[in-house]
Amino acid sequence: MEELRDIRRRIRSVRSAQQITRAMSLVASTRLRKAERLVEPARAYAEALHRVVADIAARTPSWAHPLLKPREGLTCGCLVITSDRGLAGAYNAEILRQATHLIKSGAAGSARVNVVAVGKKGRDFFRKHGPRPAREYHHPDAPDETLAQRIAHDLLADYLEGRVDAVKMVFARFVSRGSYRPETLQLLPLEGEEDRGVCPSGERDVGIPGAPDDAGRGPEGAAGEREPGRPYLPFSYEPSPESVLDRLFPHYLTSVVYMALVESKASELAARTVAMDSATDNAGELIERLTLTYNRARQAEITQEISEIASGAESLR
View 1 (cartoon, rainbow, N blue to C red):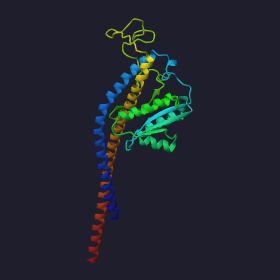
View 2 (view 1 turned 180 degrees about the horizontal axis):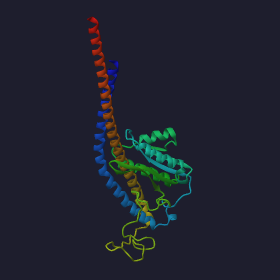
View 3 (view 1 turned 135 degrees about the vertical axis):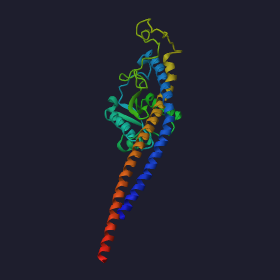
View 4 (view 1 turned 90 degrees about the vertical axis):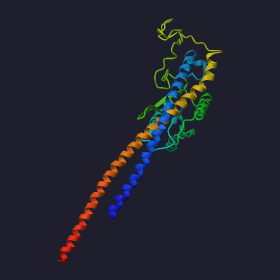
């Protein structure tokens, strides 16, 4: 009886856990649909701003603006975006693994790394394993433009005031409802040698369609030539490309950080949906095995009781 009681208790416990994981999967799936609707607009806006900023940067010598000039400094800022909550499979572990690899490799040659943690999981990890975060932010359930603006303002201030010599960001790129990938994106300086022309989407940037390059050539590279159907657009910036870049870059940086927050949240919800679906299925299989074990134990107990009754009746004859 004690064994049967323990099995029944385990079945009830697993069934309760299954109800929780099923409910979490439904909630995450519902929130994922809302998050998906934010990904594409945020990504498109960040890419459009990137093309404009890249075009301005192409017209500005790297020595003429602090946002473009590569530094030989020893400190790199690393913005790591994780979640505030767990139960999302390997989502946070993969982000932290990539961030740890970046830190151990010296962040592309830098001797020191200033970690900026977004999300409790990243905060707790770096508090325990180091380096201790220089700044910490919560990652809210709904991506917040105000938070993105505050993060971008702090990163830009660190860079312009010389506390860091480069800024990189580690986040999760949302691919589909069942897929995401950790990525590292350089934010500052604007055009590093290794990341020159890379859009926030991860694709190679080709500049503004129809815009000329430094030599005054068209999109195809030959002077005066242009693709049929795509007009040649000679842009000019007033009062100067440098002043326009000063005004535009904070908005661009905010848009990239906001895009990363949106994509990270969608990736987190996608990972949680898959993880909770898998946990629900595993709980169902465990309940089936426990039920089968219970039935066998119950049958054995009934058989033993019948044998005892038959033996007692035989001894009374």
